[in-house]
Length: 375
Image 1 (cartoon, rainbow, N blue to C red):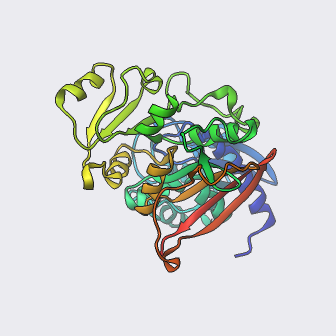
Image 2 (cartoon, one colour; image 1 turned 60 degrees about the vertical axis):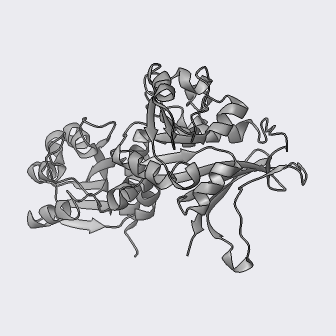
C-alpha cells in the first residue's frame, strides 16, 4: 500500500521515539506518538515503563490546547481499556484529534481493534498500516506473547568462517572482535530473559549481564535501569550442577531450571535468593517448551539464548527459535572445532532453510539476522 510521504515522515519520527523505550517497557509494547498540526510537530512522547503514562498521553500533555484538530501518529493502536493507566483512545477523542495514523493494530485481546473502532465512532479519520514492518520488528516479542502466550526467542551464536564455535577442548575466547561484542550487549539489553546452559556456566563462568558502558553508540542515550535491574538469567541445569559460587549467581535475578533434584540441592540455591523450578521433559532433561511458556506467563516478551552448540541445537531442533543472530569472524578453526549447532539431520530433504532479515558488518565480522523456515 502506498502511503502519503508526510505520513511516512512523521511515523518514522514516532518509531524513533518508541525506540527510546527499547530497554525499559518490560511486558508492555514500545510505543511512540507524534502530534502534528499545520505541518509542525506540537507534541511528542513515548512509553517508558509499565504503570507510567502511555506515549499518547505525553504527546497530548505537551501539545495542550493545540492538540485540537491535529493528527496523531501512533506506532500502535491506542488502548481502549482501563489498566494501570486510563484508555488512550478516549484521551485522543476528548482532545479533539481529527485524524489518527497507526502503524500496527494491537493483538492484545483487551484491545484487538476496539481502540480503532472507538476512534472511528467518534468521527476521527483513521489510517492503519503505515510502516507496520517497523512495528513488527520492534514489538515482535509483545505481539507473539499476545497471540501465542510465548516470548520471541532469539538465538545468538558466534562462529568462525568454517562454522566452528570453540576448539575441541571447549576454548572459545573471543571469536569475534570488539564491535560485534558490543552489538551483543544490544540484544541482551532488549531481552527480558537470557537463557544459557550449565555447560556454558561451567566452561566460561559467565555473568551474562548487560554492561551499559559497552552498549553500541546508538544505544548510549536510551533510558535504562540496569544498575538496579538486570534481565532474568535462566540456567538450564537438569541436575543442578551450577556451582554456588558461580559469577552468574552473584547478581539477581537468576532462575535455575532442573529436571529433577533433591530438596537439599534446591534449598542451597534458594538460600542465596536464586529461584529454582523443576520442569522435566524426556530423557531426564528440561522441557524447553515448558520453560518458554513459563517465561511468557511472567510477561517476558523477548528471550535471548546464549548457549553452547548442544543447548542451542536443542532449541532449534524443537522448533523453538524465532530468530537467529549469528556473528561470523574471518578466521578458520579447523575440523576438530565444535560445530555451530549440535543436532542431527540425516536426509538432505530435512535440511532447514533460513530467511535473511539483514546482514551487517561490524569491523571485520559479519552479523546475520535470520528466521528459520520450519515448514
